[in-house]
Length: 257
Image 1 (cartoon, helix red, strand yellow):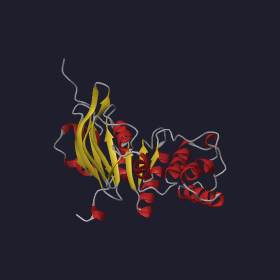
Image 2 (cartoon, helix red, strand yellow):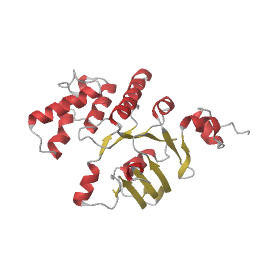
Image 3 (spheres, one colour):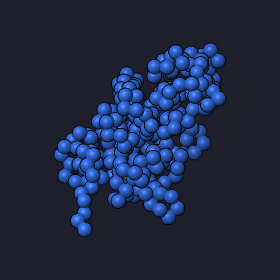
Image 4 (cartoon, helix red, strand yellow):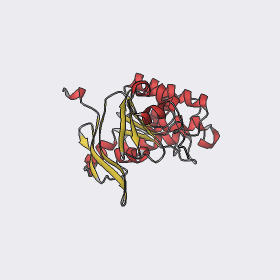
């Protein structure tokens, strides 16, 4: 396999949990360059926990997360910082600083990690906000815009350093269906136009079908991956009743008394 064809993320033998509690056991999967890869599953299945391990916020009980050829788990110092420069993260709440304008929020990583001039940083911040449709709101505070716009601003900040990979944690959480659909369209457009790889945690079925090139489905009972592939194919052809149930939004069969 040519280097350019190698997966941009390789997760190998990853086990994770908290204290004595094991949530995920021996996970193995790849994320391909340029795809929108979705991590899904029911409540408590470990979706957000897995994402936190993939971006280096948590250390696993075992295993490795290889990002563009380097293990983020074992890397330290400058090597770890170099890996982190390749990723951007949008947290579920957006995590914008409320006392800063949208432009100031996006400028923050540029001021922290580059030697660019003030004018250059301001220009880049405006460009990133324009990419997500917020070019006219650069001077607004987060409290002055809608929840959907806050999510867009958080994506703009995650893109500030031109990362290879964008991690989004529940981007549609708390949004109405129309705003969610608009955010889905933005993710697809950015993936197509910028060639950025997206890793998205969500359980929203409309978003999954709208944006996902490929998914892994976590199952709390199995502490691992129940299914992997195109979500439409899994919905229509999986031989696992629970997988079909999830994708077709069906309730558990009633148990006779």
